Length: 349
Image (cartoon, rainbow, N blue to C red; front, side, top):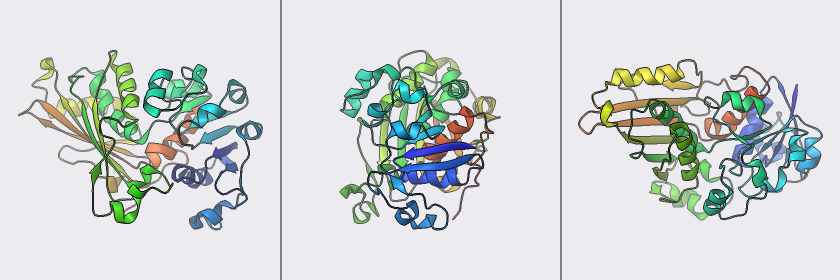
């Protein structure tokens, strides 16, 4: 059995990790850390865990937890993990960071976008970006995984195959994404109160969302050139889910490509990827069909009038966009069947 601990267990991503790991046949969830609920049993924080998890939340430090578990999940706000993770910690246990501190390779870019100091820049190049389907071999070898952001996962998975095949104008990418309110976290915030966001939709952090450099970094890596994107997130009044609509122009040499040829590109890259489902032509992803699951649904439409491809992707932001992908990465790191513990059929209604 793999002994696991979670630091930041009582936030939304942390509680989703608890839910998944408790049902994982190869994991013993041993330790839970929470600054807000020290001394409380986890099932007293979340009543849905009654009779399932009576582990007491503690303020156990990462140094002590590293001596007792094989893997630690960090579900923390940005700026905290970089203070805690060290080479000494990584010599004792594996780390999967669901936060943002190790996603960007540049300390300067991180500090510019996150407005805080990075305290362990020497680890930035050591950390592996945990986009499971594309970084599998690197994930297997690394003790430090930077779990991707939710918006980033929903943007990269549909764009990567077309970038790899060089059929799109790499300077034309526009990403319009919409997320449920759980993406804002559990902390009290006026903008996410029911009366403030119900019956409304709004764009936010326009041209300034912190997932932008993460998307650009990964697309630049796969394309071999510096990429910039226009990324606009929106908040919509539902609990969970992300729908990203990506607009990309065809390269001049690719004008005339058929929808069937584009679909063949997706099937070539993703035919063996269990958690990625390519929609039939004329069928487009919806968040309701991936809810509470680790699946990523991708569909597209070729607009021959404008020589543009419109790509739609849907994920559950709390699962494939956070805790589910983190467990998928755990499975890869410990050489377990990738589907273990996260092979749930989406729930509906």
